[in-house]
Length: 276
Image (cartoon, rainbow, N blue to C red; front, side, top):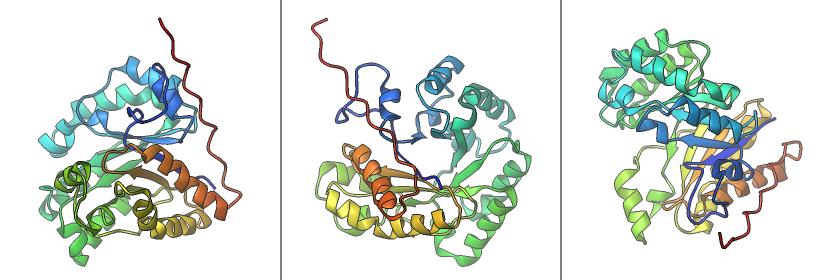
């Protein structure tokens, strides 16, 4: 029985972290992270080796494929870029939990052939997780089934981004307004396709509203764990200042229900200030 929780980043000005080894400090609070930075550029192998050195072997990275592959080339004619990326992240080893294929909102049902072809040819040594944002994938049951069938055949997971709590009422801060303009407004999904479901959840500035909004998710994860699945849950807020604490709270909530769930590590205290 294993639950992984994390955030969209491993450093934040509001988090209690030392000036160095921020990833190691983050990994002492939670046991997973979204690899969003890789969307903008393939990291150097030496950078990835450093990521691996700062995290334990059971830590999970869900690394996002570069935008060149998913947004510019739309999964077509990307062999060179794809293999360069997988070579770069190879030092993560087992920490590389899944390759995250986040597709643009313009990636429509008519483009499913490209996704199917990509997954058919993708190396089997990697796990794949797909995030779509076109409303038709959520609103049309026939199209939902088509996508699920493609993913199941490839052993890939559908990554939902649950924005229901965020859009539950009008924004009340600049951070919430900004999130309203950037986050997808799509229907909530509660179906796991594999033994390793991944959910991205974003709340509000209010901790109480955020926690109230995830009650369905704690129930769902409880069920998944009892079914023998090993989920990864990423906690977001509009400014992510409380995301690290919320991720630990989410895990604690499940562990209170399932005491056999292994605990998270004890956080490392930040280094004391120095004059030099």
